[in-house]
Image 1: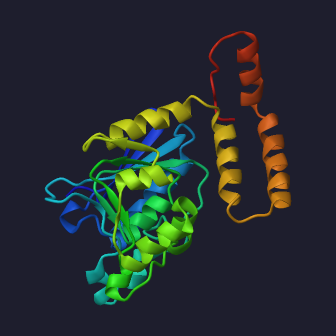
Image 2: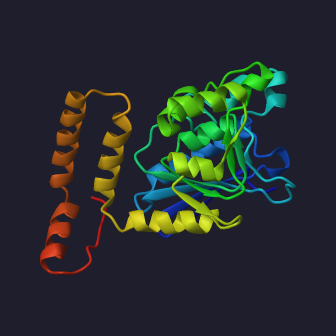
Length: 261
């Protein structure tokens, strides 16, 4: 039996794949544990600098990246298994990490599936994709960050419509509003996400991690706190081997050779 969450390394990029297509990649306890373990593996590998998160949609008539929580698990009393202590929903929604993750969506990302998208750093979506929080249609609410992350991503008014109607937002509209970085043809999302990941890998990894940390904190902290955080991160980066390499490479007019330290 194939692993329910697959992990593959391509150069400096980790590809993590939700592999439960027969259940529309809905999150049960096995998916939550598997996704958290995959992120742990990515974070622990010093030679992996960026992650790509995708889903297997083979055999699905209407492709679904992730349908969110497995309602059968919730109905049977196993709701707690859908969360992990460190990662929250799916072992991912609140998982702290240093490395950026690009999510490659080729189909519907709804409910907790959309919240997994919102917990990622960048989004590549196919033209057939859509993003929704359908919880209100089942007398539930989006409990894994969607209620505050979606308004930050696309603005309060449009997010309110998506949340209160439960109707999904088409990929093109999501792109226009800034939720999606790239629109692709169906079947091309992982390819384009890898291209974007490899571009990030050309940059100095320590600087990428530090910059990501400050950008994410901007949604929560005051300018004074962010200034102090930026200064602290800058000091750490400045003392690294890669800073000397970056400056030397610029002077010598060559491409830098990053080591991530």
